[in-house]
Image (cartoon, rainbow, N blue to C red):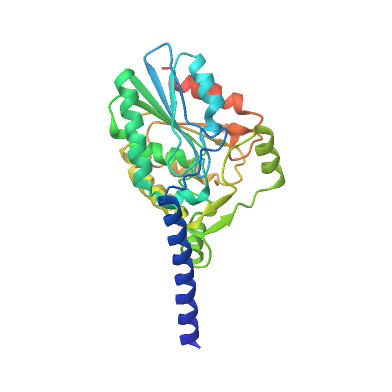
Length: 280
């Protein structure tokens, strides 16, 4: 019985690796998927010497931060929002990138902003906040970090990573399981994101979250945490976790909203809180 199980696992692993190899070969041979309409990166020149680096979430795109970026730009800020590598094209593209690629990309973006701005504020949405933490100490010109529903603890954290590790040998993608309310909000806001998640990439996300937890106590800059009052992804003790590791933390809860509150009805409230925080 054990021998059959071992053979079965080896067969599944071989099948998965062959599919993985064919996808990567197809991408490397020049079959580049164009950027999805609406997922393009954006840069908005401001009137003052203050810069904002916006970082979108995992499987998402700059579209989710466009309204916030325009709002802050109207207040005078120079705003840069890159498209993270592997995003905004096709889920298969994520197979080509690891967390180091995202960090290197963001450090270059940050470096460009610090050359034209006297100060820079980093704002990350969801997983983008974890990436923001990892680059926050890259420059003395970074004056604050804003975490928008960023998962340092999660209801599904360990389960997701364990599941990704196990089932990546069975299939490469997992379709997102969204509630009717979330689907309605996404449709209304015309959110541009992948509908399925590459399981290999979830492991990269887990590595970033783990690293960001370790570096939290080293962040001495002011940090703003905004998350939905009843977040459907992040548990309330995410706040307690951050409070125990950050000495300069401000918290704001968005009422009656989903995890991606920037796409929901009360997003303007969050915009105002973010502006008050960075306009110091």
